[in-house]
Image (tube, rainbow over all chains, first blue to last red; front, side, top):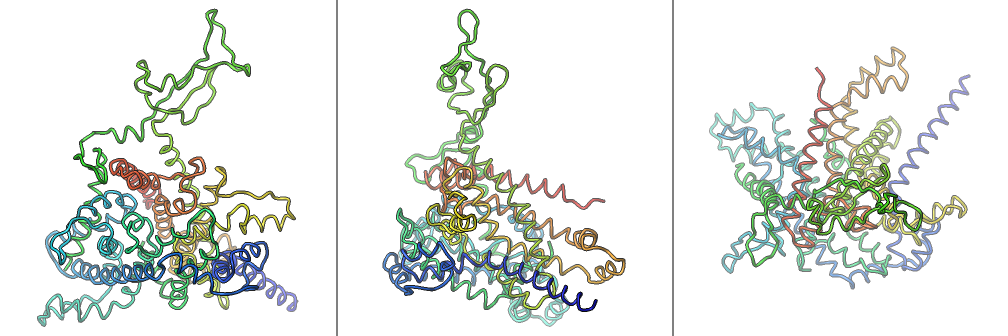
Amino acid sequence: MAQISQDNRGLRLVVRYAVLCLIAAIFSFPLIFMVVSSLKPSEQLLADAHSFRALLPLGDISLQNYFDAFKRAPVALFMFNSVLVTGVTVIASLALCSAAAFAFTFVNWKGRDLALTVILATLIVPFETIAIPLLLESSKLPWIGAGGITWGWLNSYRVQIVPFIADGLTIYLFVQYFKDLPAELIEAARVEGASWFAIYRRIVMPLSGPVLATAAILKFLAMYNQYLWPIMVTQEEQYRPVMVGLQYFFQLNRAWGEIMAYLSLITVPVLAFYLYLQKAFIASIASTGVKG
Amino acid sequence: MAGPAIALILVFVIAPFFLAVGFSFTNQRLVSPNPAEFTGLSNYRQLLGMGVLHLDPLKDAAGAVVLDDQGQPKLPELRKITRKNPDFPQFDGMRAWFSWASGEGRTYVLARDVVFMTAIMNTFIFVLVVAPLQGGLALGLALLINQRLRGINVFRAIYFMPVVVSIVVVSLLWSFIYDQREGILNNLLSAISFGTIPRVDWLGNPSTALGAIIFMSVWQAVGFHMVIWLSGLQTISPTLYEAGAIEGASKWQTFRYITWPGLRNTAVLVLVVITMQAFGLFSQIDVMTKGGPLDSTQTIVFQAIQRGYGKQDISAGSAISVILFVIVLSVSLIQRYLTREKA
């Protein structure tokens, strides 16, 4: 009897792992295919698509597609633009949204509750519904630069950065986190005469590691993967990010090898970053759901 | 300290929202030598104008029904009614959206903008399929991943992987997988069926294109909601499961009476978030099909961008945006009402 139940348990375990592996294959094969194909000449890539060779780096393996991709489009420029826009937005967003959340949570001021309500209400306005009027608005906004006042923000870095620094979700995440910090700590510092800014800078921020990581990861993913907005505001090549750069590879006879190389170039760093910080990524998504 | 963030949200979220409402009542264009004029509801009338028309078969002088070449009753020409016909000013410029046989004749539902109506229908189909499918699959995955097994975190990491990949990249990858001649999907189907399943042009066929995009979208985003379900599962107290085990509850009873009630709030959140994201369907369409074939993948946002940006018609794009906002708001209010805490 004992023997049978032992076997049964073993069999069940095998079935469970088989199911898990099958699902894992469904989620990973397109990405494996992408990276493997980027190493093959286009003709071999198409021939291999008929068998399991599609997922194996066999045959004529080289980095030629990567060189060709760099020749076809200013790939390095696009990558620089994406890193610049994403990096600046993430840092500015952490600073301004945490400061705002601090003022909403700890400081009493007139209109505070109304302002917070309005900001949280913006969470139900999908970006797609404001994209078109924001496009027109951006085409008329003033900017004070070295050459005096200029009008119109289209084709610039700022049009890709400034509108996305402050958002309801990031402020909400910080407010939720700050509410759970011990209020006595802040009161004690107030009694000792610390300024609000000193409290924010010296007490609250050093305690905010987890929420800073969460907000940074969510903002990073949203910004780096943005597509709709940059295609509208960057007609000039000089300011284009990597997702818009993809359009250089759309043509009638698609050179799939080069496309896969470009896709790998812009995706693999993010995937590596994710796999390295996997727990933090998953925790950040989970934390958006806990309070509901 | 809240000043800068509030100012930015006012300028870049709240102002554009009210501008959208304002522009939708004008003929504003992105670049125009003439100032915009107030045009009232004309954008909305142009987008949403509809009419119902019943046509009876033509009769000859003797009162008998005229038959056409195929022996079918001959109907008056629809075009003669919808093109500058002074007797039917309300149908001017409309086209048939769909029709059905009724009595001896046909009843037509006419729309001033058939493409936009198709876009609304497609968006609703997308939302209605994706919300339960993605939410349900995500819950299934979360339950699977919530087991105590060695190496389970590796599987969790893999299932979540597509979420960090841009939907633009995913769309381009899958357009290769779906390709008729070279695509992996057709190769796979033909291999397992020994060539008996014909090769399908998944994205080029009006009856499969939207389905193909739905499948890919679920594949990309399901990991996100799996993680949200997972965090909900972990808030359920283990003592409840122990009590259930002592009472001898079956697996289904455990899920039905312990797990599911514990996931209530998570379920509402997942539903609302998926619905909002699904209404914004754009990138997949722009990369894979551009709304085609035969408008079978037109969506509301794709229409808004095509007109507002592509044709630089800010006012029409804004009116579409406002319509989308009203739809999203109504749907989320209905969802909240239906999922409210029952006293």
